[in-house]
Length: 330
Image 1 (tube, rainbow, N blue to C red):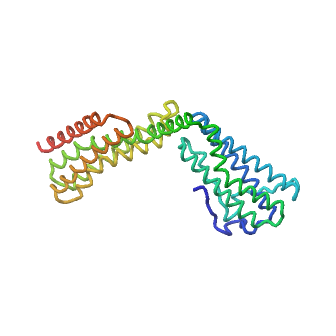
Image 2: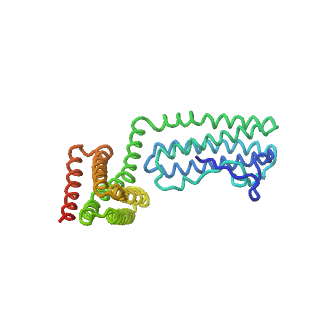
Image 3: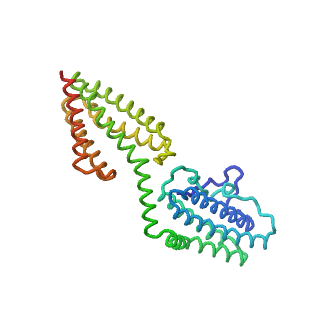
């Protein structure tokens, strides 16, 4: 949500309920100006990867500028040319905007959701402001703006129809899906495969060599955490994403590191159970689930044929598992 509410009386902030009509108008002007700048920032950010959606946000920025001009005209008519420098952060109990437009590689759907939240909070402000105003012209303008904000969803739909025809929308959705795969799914899948398969040999070799569940758990824990840190850093530093378009390095590193650690911890945690054979049986079941989860992800998101994914993952995992058991039992 973009709405954030400050505590009444915090610092030198004014309470919204104590604002005069002049201050309410000044606040509305600065709010429309900021919202227009946010939409323009979204348009600039989306212009290269999603040009049609960028045009939608350019239209929204123009609408906000029209609202700002209308508010300035009535402000000058009632209170003169000097507009009070009152902004959202000066008012307690008033919504503010989180700086999500500064986030690199912000998802297309997330941008659209944030824009919808902006319109809802602006609509609420104008409804509340209109109730506080006694001047007929000002009250009419604020009421009209409230209706306009409520109708922005329809305006956006019309803009989408104008700029985002079926082909353009399909292309942008496909590009957004591809970005999701490159930034999150692919690094996460690589991490899960590495964590699940590479830790099989050391964990089960330790288990069958020592017969000690606690020692096996410690080996599994250290192998999983170490592999997660290694994979995360490797993914994050080897490609900054600017040329490849694979997304922010920290996102890819996070996905790869976390999934690597989880892949190993899945069959290490059962060895917290003191009974060796019980722990081993549960660990083997978890290994089976992990390998089939990898097959499912490859088939669903990476479009790898099911039989080929099964052969590659299950066979590879089985060979590593067998190697660990044989080495530990020798």
